[in-house]
Image (tube, rainbow, N blue to C red):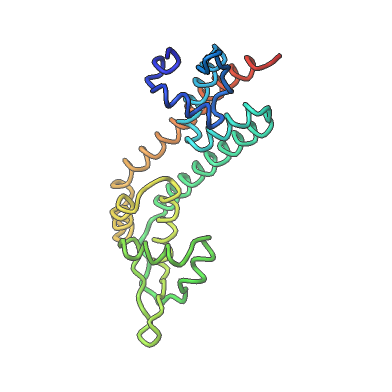
Length: 224
């Protein structure tokens, strides 16, 4: 199948894309074989161009909306992706600002417990316990109740971990960064990570531009 070969895909993948609504329905021959037209090729190019910027799930939803004639729904989904990218950029700026202002935090008794801290950050207590097990944060325990007590330094570590998780980093990648922050080792050891994060955001932005161009071509091809 030419459509599959052009993009290095299997014929089954093309059928799956059609069944999922990513491609418009193909016409059938008298023997039941599917026939694909240039419009299907444009739809496939649009989908594959959308994936790097928006992710597979969002790209699928966008194409499904277009193919059922709900263009406004597709545009709303695209806007939501752009909004998330903007949020991620703001998160990166927040991390950079936090690291610029990095300084040792006095060891003082904290009065923040796991429940209030989790609610403040929109996290589940189980998430904070998982981060503790991974070494990202080290709250002490009240000797009488056994409750976790988060000091100012612990809250800082939790906030930075939360920001880095939103940036797409894994716990094992975050742990050494938190260790650097905890020891107030300065910004230099973290600069390469921040540059990589910025590069990935820029790549997503460029991918969204390419996806928008190919999707616009497909939308124009669908016009009466």
